[in-house]
Structures are given as structure tokens and as C-alpha cells.
Image (cartoon, rainbow, N blue to C red):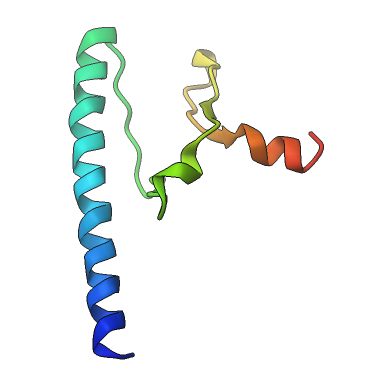
Length: 80
């Protein structure tokens, strides 16, 4: 791996961490507002490009205690 590639990879990780930290801060505010908390271990996905999350929706079955997401345009692409 060349120096520029290492620098780019490191910068991407820093950017991902900063976006994740901002997300967690906003998630805490949402939790306080709505009285809903999430416990997740190993289930977090940070999109390389935030535009990849366009069309994202979460499941809304509160009785299951599961929280998952789908990308609507991916379902359309698959014909679902």
C-alpha cells in the first residue's frame, strides 16, 4: 500500500468516526425526546458514502424489540 492510500484510508476512518459520533449524539437526543433506547452490539453499519443511506427506512414492529433497516431503492432494484 502506498503512502497516499494509507493516508486516504486513515482519513476515511477518521471521517467515519466523526460521522458516527455525531449520529450517536443525535440518537441520544432522540432517545430522550421519545423515551426509547437502543442496545446494539456489533450491529452498526457506517456507510462509506452517506448518500448510500438515501432511501433508508427502519422496521417499525415495536413488539419484536428488533430494529433493522432496508434501503428502499435496493428493494426496487431487486423487484421486491
